[in-house]
Amino acid sequence: MASESMVPEQAKQHLIKGKRRQQQQQTQPSSSDGDEDAFVFEANEAWKDFHSSLLHFFEAGELCDVTLKVGSKLISCHKLVLACVIPYFRAMFLSEMAEAKQKLIEIRDFDGDAIEDLVKFAYSSRLTLTVDNVQPLLYAACILQVELVAKACCEYMKLHFHPSNCLAVRAFAESHNRIDLMDMADQFACEHFTEVMECEDFVSVSPQHLHKLLSSSDLNIENEKQVYNAAIKWLLANPQHHTMWLDEILAQVRLPLLPICFLMGVVAKEEIVKQNLKCRDLLDEARNYHLHLSSRAVPDFEYSIRTTPRKQTAGVLFCVGGRGGSGDPFRSIECYSISKNSWFFGPEMNSRRRHVGVISVGGKVYAVGGHDGNEHLGSMEVFDPLTNKWMMKASMNTKRRGIALASLGGPIYAIGGLDDNTCFSDVERYDIDSDRWSTVASMNTPRGGVGSVALVSHVYAVGGNDGVASLSSVEKYDPHLDKWIEVKEMGQRRAGNGVSELHGCLYVVGGNSWAQCHTAGQGRVWPCAPVSAARSGMWAKDPATLWIACELCWLLQIPKECYEGGTTELLNTVFCMVVSNAQGEQ
Image 1 (cartoon, one colour):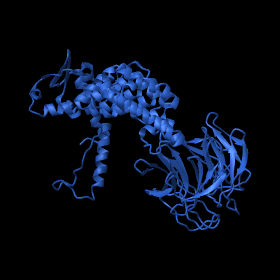
Image 2: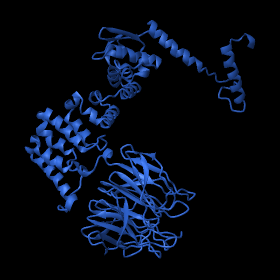
Image 3: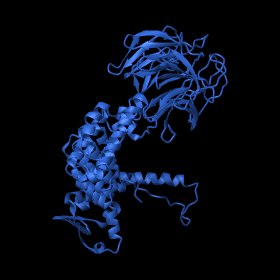
């Protein structure tokens, strides 16, 4: 036996591994027939030699047992390699097909270079994708069932999407049933819709595909006019589809969200709309929506997806101030993008604020009152997204926290609230143009932690705490009479609840029934969402929410959906209730 010094280095490493394995197995029963010196020898490095040898044999044309003929191109290779990597050939060679025994196999309707690239991939596991070869490669990979290559081609094409090619790529993907690539192309087309609709091949898209695009809530648009213009552009260029698709395509445009002047001045005068009965019905629906909003002249108007803004036009959800686990108030804000389903930080306020009143009016966000950790605040600041800055405005007359804000006809109303000694019934009105606060009629009941919203020419104050107990009572303010009027109370006492208006109803979420207004204590947290229809004055219950707001609850209304946050514990979760089917989503 040769000495270890005479053993080649590579073999020496295997010998050492073998000795180690033998030592490890000394305490284990031997699986051999009494041979205590047996050990398992593994040479993983041999796989590299195996692969490189296969590639060498392929490139040199040695030991090949089959030749693929693709057009004028001949590709000599090995059946075993093809069968291991390409399912199409595996099925062929293991079947009773005539090709299984042939030395020359002709493959038709494929690009020769694409097949050669796939065969090389079978040997080397490497593939170079380019703009020129990715489409024939994807076609070949789909037919030959090489899913790894097909996915790589889809990802490559995604990286090279452009408004001018995404529709063509989507059509190609559909012809090969590549759902993943179709979804990628649709997502890109939605994100760049205004550019896509200006491209030449937009009018060549299939009616089915256009229907899907226009129905998406993810369209990145500035306003619904752009969707209408895209639909009319396609319809005018494709009169052959009017019989089957005219009203279906126009129904995907959310006509009620168009300005009334545009509806009457443009849509109503469009000939293809005037001549179609179903299109005229859609126009009537849009008119009724505007009448319903302006005067409630159509009290039984039925809301639908066409009255729901698309995500990009629905705005951004603001989470302003609050406090963390240490109790220290925040001056930071976080913003939620509905279209991207993600949170991001916005510019900080000038003051720290917890239990702050927040409202959005005229495209700006107002933060009023609250507590900065040392004292109660009467100050107000406003965030302008155009400048991305907070600016201080006139202060209220009364410093307080836990106030509710509502806007009716322009002015902002600061309602109720509390300090360390008192729950207030005070109400102040802020005029945005003059930057001045004035006092209006006080509520009938002091309310700290009250919820408020404007609905049908009134401002509602819902629940709260009067300093003794949480309240179930509700009152509304008539600005013409400068008077608060009691309305039907809720079924439960609630303070710190969130309130929103949607489809003519008040939604009240969460809150607590604590016995004291200022001190912590045990109390019940309410999970249900009572609903009141302003016209009937009756309260009903919607399904319970999953997590409930107790001390810090807010409710922001975005058409069709209500967003609710806050809890007895400090959480960062947010839930959305889709009112059409009354289900909560986190």
